Image (cartoon, rainbow, N blue to C red; front, side, top):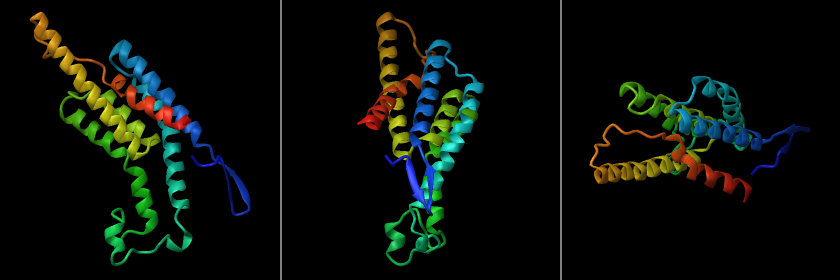
Length: 196
C-alpha cells in the first residue's frame, strides 16, 4: 500500500487510500444487511456512497497518471511496444491508457445494470448498482474476485435450494435469495489482504 504522505514538487500532499477502503466496506456491510433483511437495497444508500466513490475514482486516476514519467506522458508506443502494452495503441498516449485501466472496474457494473434493465430485473437492479458502486472503489482484480465469489456461492445456494425442493417434493423454480451476501468470501479476503 502506498505511503499516506507523498511529497511532490516541494510540498507535502496527504493521501490516504485506506479511508476509501473502509468507506467501501461500510457500504458493502450495509448492503449485505439490507439485502438479508429486506431482499432489497434502498436507492438512497447507493446514492449516499456515490460521492465518496467518485472521489475514490478521481484519486485512482490521479495516482495512475502520477506513476507515468512526465517524458512518457504523451509518448506513442511504437513497434513491439504496441504488442506488449495491450492498453495502448498507436493513437493512445500513456495517460489515456492509465485512465482506461482505472475505468475498467466499472465495466462489470455497467454490464449488470444493462442486463437488469433489459431482462426486467431478472438480475436485481440493486445488485447491479452494488457492482457499479464497487467499481468506483475497487481494482479490476478485486472486482473479478467479487464477481467470482458471488457467482460461485450463488451457484452453490441454487443447487442446495434445488436439492431441498426435490427432497421436499416442491418446485423451487420461483425461489430467490439475496445475492450481495454471496460476495462475503471475497470481501473477507480483501479485508484480510489489506491488513496482512
